[in-house]
Structures are given as structure tokens and as C-alpha cells.
Image (cartoon, rainbow, N blue to C red):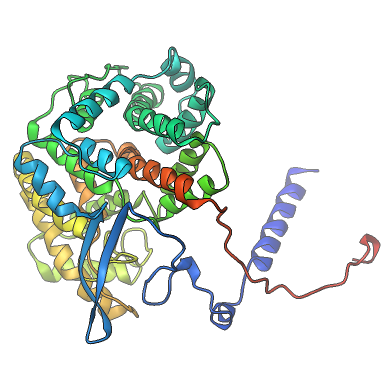
Amino acid sequence: MGNTTFSAEMERLASLCKENGKINPELYSKFDVKQGLRDVSGRGVLTGLTNISEIYAREVVDGKVIPCDGRLFYRGFEVGDIIKGFTKENRFGFEEVTYLLLFGELPTAEQLRVFNEILAEKRVLPKNFVRDIIMKATSPDMMNLLSRGVLTLFYYDQKASDNSVDNVLRQSLELIAKFPLVAVYGYQTYRHRYHGDSFVIHNPEKGLSTAENILHLLRKDSQFTELEAKVLDIALVLHAEHGGGNNSTFTTRVVSSAGSDTYSVISAALSSLKGSKHGGANIKVVEMIDDMKEKVKDWEDEDEITKYLNDLLDGKAFDRSKLIYGMGHAIYSKSDPRAKAFRSFVEPLAKEKGRQAEFNLYQKVERIAPALIQGRRKIYKGVCPNIDFYSGFVYEMLGLPRELYTPLFAIARISGWCAHRLEELISGGKIIRPAYESVAPRREYVSIDQR
């Protein structure tokens, strides 16, 4: 088949695929199908039960369900209270939150000390893994590399397919500890291979927290400030878990329910998180703000900012998607508690980095954008900034490369994924299999010479 004929046939097949992949939108209403497993008000279809976390965004007043300020609970503890607790005591919190998510209780000082030692001992990759797996087959996509690294770790585990709770817990702790190494080493290899940077790899330090080790591993001089490490730690805490219904966590439970092994389950979750509608949103926010900084001449002029935001909604600015990235959430209406908690730590970091003007610009967008969106769109609930609105800005101020933004999300969220996998194995029992209604017309088979 010649190139021209081949191209024409591929175009025909693509057209055929698009034509037969369309479903009449009216049929979703006819069969009461909730697309995305959500109703028009944004409420999710109840598909399971969990003890791990709760998202609270509505309350009943006089018999009516109304939006309220969002609240997020880990094992019954409000996240804001957890953060206040460990920051007041001048401690790092991600390891404590990981313990809470996995075991259902806050650790004592001694239990946390031992848990940190366990994670420190497991922060090591198999012999020659960096050379044979990461360096020899590097990828320009860090999520692809992270997923492949997880799947490869299967072959280094003599009990890889053992789904007993004790064994899955062991695997979970090892993956939680190893994720930062695979991500950062993969990035260093990528920069060396594709951009000619010097290749520097540090070993993790046992006395450092997860957040500190990430900065230590990533920076050539291993130097970082206390504020930098603590802000990154807060980011990890806020990204560690978010209810059982987010796409990657639901993926974790679906694949776990099928009886698959831990490495395949976490790889599937990574594939979900990689999507721009899920884990990649904070990159879009930073890119959008970069474009705004170029187009808006006076960052203090709210009329000029409003015009740019309207241009975004009209599809005339940035990527012409008609979206203001970082605004809106599937569940939260009035406020995202993660964004509120994060904001108080973003301002001091902006001052330390001399980027107050940009922080002020973010604040103006946060205040102006929701009203513009609600005035232009058919919104069944309120619009508020989500955690992605500020997280990309924080990572940028920390000097973290954009290629690692989504892997950082994964480094945090694997704690939640592992907690949900364990809960599914302990309390699930049935394979998750939702129903799809067929709307295809019945047809008679026609022999090939009569088609």
C-alpha cells in the first residue's frame, strides 16, 4: 500500500470511528445516565463507603441542601486542624498524615519516630535500578517514567502478586518511600539526556523528611531553606488524599477490586493522574498566568485583568479553551479548604522570594474570576479557586521544574491510594462493575460480498 493510499485509508477509518462513536446527548437524559458519575448539581453517584476521608461541601438548612465552605477530613480529623497542630509544634506533617491514612490513628511521638525510621530504611532502590531502568530507558515524560518504574519494581519483589494485607502494606510503605527517588532521578536523567545538563545524583538522607529529601535530591548543592521545605511539606499533606471518588483513587479501587497486584494498581492510578483534567491542572494555571503577565500591562489594573479573564472565557486568549484554569471544582462550591489552607503559606514564601507582585495578581484573579464565570455560564453551584490555583505558583517559587509538578502530586497521593487499596482488599470483596445501557440499533449480519 502506498503512502498516499495508506493516509487516505487512515483518514477514512478515523472518520468512521468518530461517526460511530457519537451518542445522542438526549439519550443520557432519557436513561437518567449521570455522565462522569455526577448529577447536574455536581454530586457524585454513591458507589462505595470509606473511613479514610470525607469532603464536606453542603449542609441541610430548613430541609434544603445548600453549599457551604468546603471542609476536608482525614480519618475524621479536619485537615486544617492537623496542619495547625504540626506547624505549631514546628514539625513536618506528611509522614504523620501518611500514618493516619494507612492505620486510622494519629501516631504517638514514639510511633512516629519508628515510622519515620521505617520509611528512611525503605528509601533505597534495588541494585543497579537507576543505571539499568532509569538511565538506559529515560523518558521526556516523568509520569510515564514513574509508571514504568513502578511496574518494573514488580520484578524485584519475590512476593509481588501476594495480595494479603500484610504483604500489600509492606509494598505500600516501600512505594511511598521510593516514589521521590524514581521521580527525581528520572528527571535528572531526562535533563542530562535531552538538555545536556550535568548529571548529579544524591543519596537520600535518613534524618530528613520526605519534603526535605525531595529538595535535597533535586538541587545540585542540596541546599534549601526551612520555609521552602515546610511549604512543600504542606503541599504534600494537602495532596495526600481527597475522598474515594477522585479519578485516580477510584481507579485504584476498581483495579484492586479485580484482584490485581499492587504495582499494576498504582501504575493504573498514575495513568489516571497523568491526565490534564486531573493531576496536570496546576501546570495549566502557571502557563495561563504567564500569558496574563505578558498581555496585562498593569497588574494592579483590575479592569485590564477583567478584560483578559473575559477573553479567556470567550476563547480569545491563552489556549482558547474558554476556561480559567484553577477555578471551579466538582464538589466544592464556596471554597476549597485545601486552597484556603495553602494560601496562608504562599504569601510568606512569595515575600521570601521577592514575588509579592505576582502573588497580588493571583489574589486579584481569585477574587474576580468566580463572578465572571457564574455570570457567563449555566452553573448549578458556586465557583471557587481550587488547590491547583496556587500549587503551581508555589512549585515555581521553589524552583521545581514543571516536568515534576504532576509527579509531586503522585508522591503525595500515593499515601491515599495505598490506604484505599488496603480498605478495598479488607472491606470490598466484589469486583466493581457499573452498568452501561446499549443504545445501538439491532442489525442483521450481511455477508462480506454484499456489503
